[in-house]
Length: 320
Image (cartoon, rainbow, N blue to C red; front, side):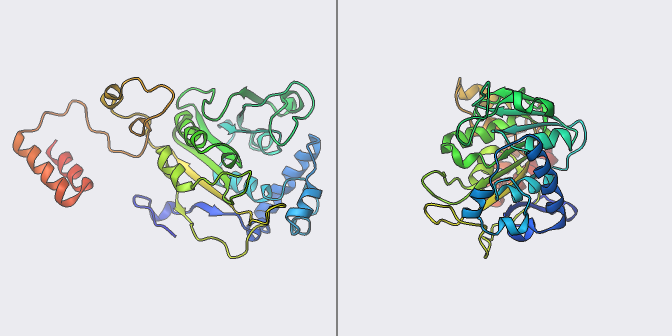
């Protein structure tokens, strides 16, 4: 377990964890999955029972009525539990597709929900695994916007929660990185991004480290990260036999802006988001601070070299 500097003991909870059958067996997950299965049936969404029998033989015994794909029996209740939903929250589901999860946010969570998906069809179910038909979900009171995760159709600092469940492993690494930065952009300060992803490597799954995504996002883990791989693997992919491990992480947005001078010096970098432009947990230096004398600047530089950034910053704040 990695303790996170700056997180109080009271707020230390699991912000990152692996999917386990043990969690699926918990009473909380069972209750949520029962509601999800009901919604799944009411919307006549595709039944994954036969697929689960081949890939996850334990799923039928654990949740006989489940029509959901087996890994979702962990991902959906985990995300719902970690999101700490409240009525009227503004939520976004990135790569929403046709699942029971997005309607759950609106119908059970009483949230105002926007689904983002690059593949929107006008009739019937989308062909293949991905895409969404808004007409089939119209009774769920969800707003749909056709866009990729690398260019979310939402304003800055507007959403309380952003979900991205089992999407990142299906896109190229560059898109995944830009997508996590877009999620950071649209979140309100204090908002949470709840993300799950497959970690196994196969011909259809891109291996992206959760730690890389955290670094690129500029967001902070909302608690402790469990990086200990589970002893009992969740399941296996059908063709290759790779263990199907799923990881979830909850990230928090603390700030909204960085010093504009860095953006100006960077020039016009349209099409990419530079690291120094990404909001993160930082101490904001007053813009009207008095210029420091040369001797104080030298002391600060010496402190930075000898004791590090935190000590230099503390000394600077004392001087100003």
